[in-house]
Structures are given as structure tokens and as C-alpha cells.
Image 1 (cartoon, chains in turn yellow, green):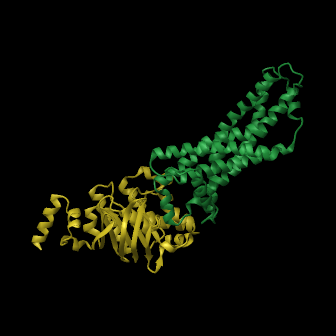
Image 2 (tube, chains in turn purple, orange; image 1 turned 90 degrees about the horizontal axis):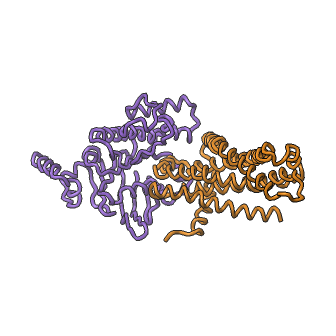
Image 3 (cartoon, chains in turn green, yellow; image 1 turned 180 degrees about the vertical axis):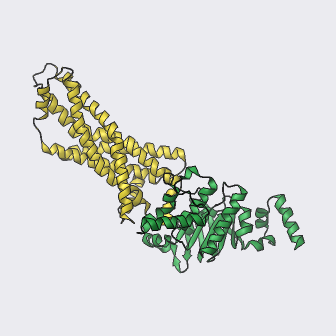
Length: 254
Length: 248
């Protein structure tokens, strides 16, 4: 379980987060959604410790991330994997070297064991046989999956994904969503995804946190969304006339 | 408001101890040090060779011009070229050029990693990025740059010889006699003090500029330029201070 407690974050006079209280549930796919500029990425970076909040606490079970020393934070990060919006794959390394990097850095395993683990992670993301390719030689969707493989190579307890669907076609985006959701269940991780992709929200949102102008404006799950009366959330989720019609039909049929 | 020198100096002083924290995995750091040594050392060999030949040649030609028909013995040419290049020109000139070549490269490499979120990705993995990205570069530079400076000092003497002897300014024996005269071992110490100091300056300043870069490609270019400009200025200031401290 990860809990954001009364999180405030300001950059100069610009108040980006204004008192966020939210619990990301263990073993589930948790989503942070909201319009551009709502503070999703800032909240995600605070949750993983890449930014410090101006005020508030981040709890990993009973451990307060904001009070940890650098060594304690590094120790906690052994349990954390993250998929970045731009993948953050090291361009000068092959796919295998990218995925193996955390193993090389933090384990004393033999090379054969490390290669087995890399191959297992590649199988998990359905990318067998591309070990020797460089990130520039594979598609954007494959790069995302390599990023996921690298994020799970140390068997993390927590997986964070920053806009995992950005720049992908709808079909590939759905596959990435399904993959993250399946991995969350298979590896019993607590997953936090920052997204504004409506497919993700409706497909994999087991717990959803909706931010509006730096405040928590709504929380619930994907089935609550259809029946929501929260005007702000409605205007965000059902922004297009097509989705509005779909919703009306769904509500009528139910 | 644009933060000034004191702000950056304070930030640098706070950041610097993180570079020397215990490595997560010595083998990874060792591999990175070797890679950096190759990049800095072998990668800079040609430019150092070329500039050193010309440093020696120009020193010899200009000294010959200044000597003119004076009563100073002609063999002094070798002595002057040797000491001028060893004490001043080889370490300073080489490091000014390396600040442009190696320093800007380091700033761009680390800054690029910052912008592509590679540094954040490593931090999330639990890597001490200040240490992993900077310490190998610093150690490699502290090993390779003094070697490059030694090579520069040697090659400069060759440059002086090529500009003096085959062209007929001086004879082979005059030049070699000069090279072997009035040798003071302390001058070698001075050369290495300068080489180590300048290596430290150009690496740490460049890595700092790259590590804390914010913004996009224009800011990265500006950081790379600042790395060279600040390194060059600090090298020249340090050169003056070392000259005062070690010669007075």
C-alpha cells in the first residue's frame, strides 16, 4: 500500500498540488488521471521520490519516504520499478544490456543466470529474440515493453508507469495496458499508472484518482465512472460526443 | 533572477561529496573508468599530438626570432623550448583544448542523459547517479590527462626540433645540448601539479554543468558552452595561483 498524505507542491508561486490525500491499494492497478497540467506527473514523481513535496508525506506501508535518508531511499528503490513516458532506455546499450543493467549493478549473479532472467522478462512482455537489437532499431511499442521488462527485472513490489500509452496507436496502447494489468496480477505488484487515456481508465482502472487543478476531485473505480454524477469528471471522461452517446446507450441498456 | 557564482559554488560543494560515496558495484565502476580512460586518453591523442608539435615549433621559431644576433648561446633554444612547454604550454594549452573537447563532451553526455530521463531511471533503480556518472570520469581524467600532458611535453620538444634543425636555424647538436642543459626536476613536479589540477577542474566543472542542466536542447548547448568557458577561466586562474605558489 502506498499512501499520499496531504501532499502540497509548489514551484515558486505556482501551486501544483494542493493537499492530495489518496491511498494506492496493494496488488491493484491504481490510476492517476486528469487533464494536462493537473499535476499527475508531479504527484507520480513525488510518490517515487524524484521530487520532494513542499508539505505532506508519502507512506510505503509504515515507512515515510519523505523522512528517509538517501541510503534508505535507495534501499526502498530496490522494490520499485518505473516505466518512463519516453522509455528512458539507454541508447548505446542493446535491449539485453538495458534490461540487465539493474542486475549488473545490484546483484552478483553469474552471467548465465542474468541472461536467463533477461530472457524470462522478455518472455513476460512477449519480446523473445530481440536481445541484441538497439532501442533505435525497434518500434515505439516494443520500446515500451522493453521499458516494462527492465522495470520488472528485479522483481519489484511497486511498479510506476508515467503515460505508458503516449505516442502509441490504440491497438498497441490496449496491449500495453493489458500487459501491465496482467503483470500486476502475476507478480502481485502495486501498480500506479499516470494516464489520460480513456481506454486505460475503462479497461484496467481498479482504483482511480482524478486530479483537477492540483486537487483530488474524485476517486473510485472503472465501474463507478459510468454512473458518476461528478460534473468535473464527466466533462473530462466524456469529453467527446461519441463517448457521451456510448455512455447514454450503456446506461439505457443497464 | 539568475543565480550567481556563490549559488553555484555552494551547490557544487554540497553535491561533490556524493560523488565519492561507496559504489554499488565496483565492477561496473571499473568498466566505466576503463571506457572513460579510453575515450579521454586514446580519443584525445591525435589532437594533443598536433597541438604539441605546433606549440614546440612556434616556441622555437619565435625564440629564434627574439634571439636574433644576440650574445645568448644558440643551444639555449632547446632549453627554452623544453622548459616553456613543460612548465606552462603543455599542461595549460593541452587542458584548455581538452576542456573544449572532453569537457563539452562530458557536459553534453550527462546533460543528454538528464533530458532523456536516463538519470531519473537510474535513480529509481537505486543507483547513486552522482557517483556512477561522475566518479569514473573524474578518475579517468586524473589518470589520463597527466599522461597526455607528459606526451604533449615530449612531442613539443620534437616540434621545436623539427622547426629548428631541418630548417637550418640551429644544428642538431645545439638543440640537443639545450635540451640536456639546466634541467630542474622541480619543473616536472610543477607540470604534474598543473596537469592534475586542470584535469580536476575541467572534469568537475563540465560534469556539474551537465548534471544540473534543465530545459531543452538550447539549454543543453548553453550548458556545454558554459562547461568550456568556466573550465578555461578557472584553469587560467589556477595556472596563475600555481605559478605563484610553486615558483616564489
